[in-house]
Image (cartoon, rainbow, N blue to C red):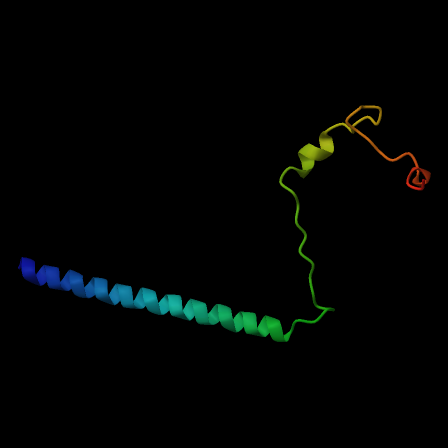
Length: 84
């Protein structure tokens, strides 16, 4: 009995593995097909820009601005300082 049960479970696992591999292949084919369709329809007018938000953007916006009179904050006074 135990040999038969072992064979049954072995067959079931082989069938499950085959069906799982087949699903992976179908999924891969489906995604490549979708990518090809998107590439054929890729025009500048239809392009949707990707909007990304920084993870710390709210934290950065809530901080106070750096005062310009600090010694670490240096700016050029004018363009005339470049010409000598």
